[in-house]
View 1 (cartoon, rainbow, N blue to C red):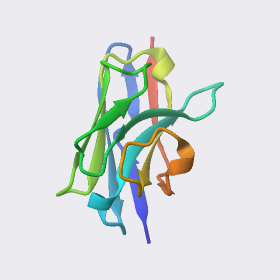
View 2: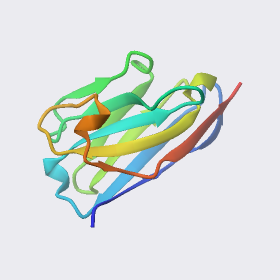
View 3: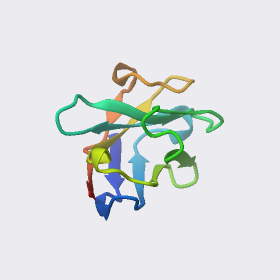
View 4: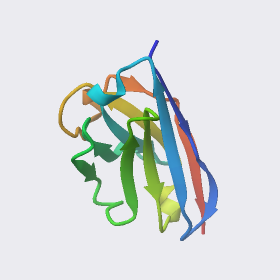
Length: 124
């Protein structure tokens, strides 16, 4: 059974930082690209960042470039999202997802497996 479990969310003041983690089990981590999406109030779920299965290429949404960084640790079967310079508009539920494709994927439909999400709340 494939499981993706997010952690690291919480309440932080604007300008602060968080590091989200997504630990996977039940899949061969090195064969999956990984992504982060978020659901913010009043919006549909949107792409945040993705990383190729080999870790050699990443993609970040324009709204988070320079502030968020995706990375992965194959020994721990875990993907991370470092969130810096947080803004109130970053508030939402953050989901990780796994994609069997080779390259980075920015579309939800590309992802086979999803976690349950972790809440990030940024206060002004």
